Image 1: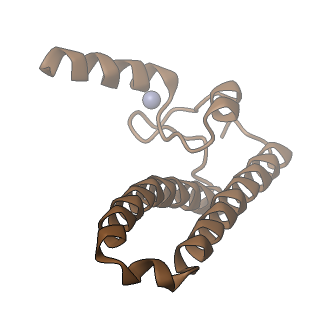
Image 2 (image 1 turned 180 degrees about the horizontal axis):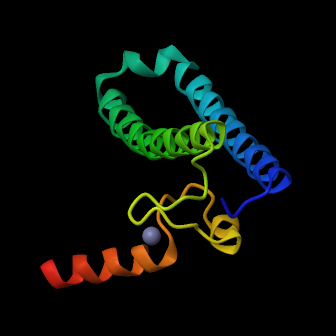
Length: 121
Ligand SMILES: [Zn+2]
């Protein structure tokens, strides 16, 4: 385990703050969607409203994906698995985790994965 306890606590706080930020943004836009039900009365408006809603749902899909990744990272901290590469079991560097706290691969495996993807394409 390359990370000490205070570094783990630091990541835990960072991840929780990030999750809260995403959830706050999410509940704000949800509130916005529920406002003004009168807009739905006009069938012409309804079509454009639905496009807008599809767009919001797509954005939320991305937020949810990220929130899930953050929760997985928080679980890994709890289980003492955080900062360990999923692929080779080696340590992920502190610097890499700082830049990308939800990553599950060390830089070597990430590069390998990206090169692999390029080869298969
Ligand atoms: Zn690795």
